[in-house]
Length: 184
Image (cartoon, rainbow, N blue to C red; front, side, top):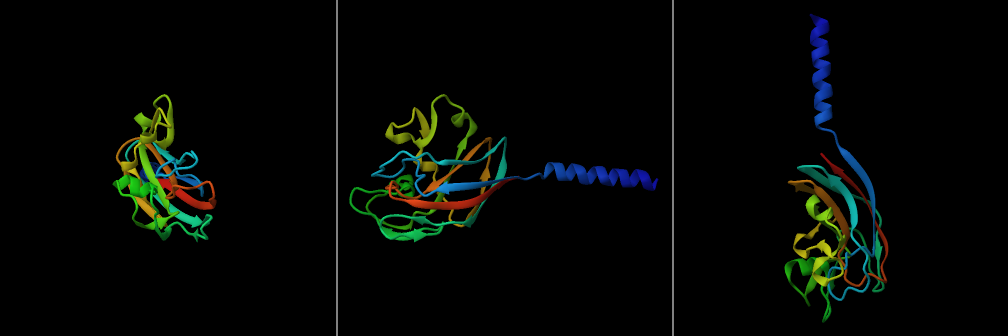
């Protein structure tokens, strides 16, 4: 009887462990990975695929280390820095909201976007801004969101989380962010 109970308990624990399994990736997001979002976007550096989930999942992004530098003397962590965006310029998160020429609180911050599997698997997909005719199938800016030092995201379907930098002039950027990304 004790053996049967022990066996049942052991199987229950193994089943629970299998259903709460966590996938985890270490990801480096270079300081120039803007996905060509924003305006004036100077070089086409796709967003970085961080993790792919096969169904509804919680995805957690956690900053580990690193800074992004650029020509303006900025050397910042994943929350970014306040910046007056000049005439004719628009950062990716500003494009997401349809705003330009305004003060931004998060230049060079860590940003993300979750793209459903049905889009990622389309022929010609690139992790670039779909509004600028640089990708046959790309990413719409309205899905971009701020991550900073960390964020937990609900992905209601299969797809891929892409990460990038909130800057529109990235050819002079250096460094990047090391993050862990997990899904369960």
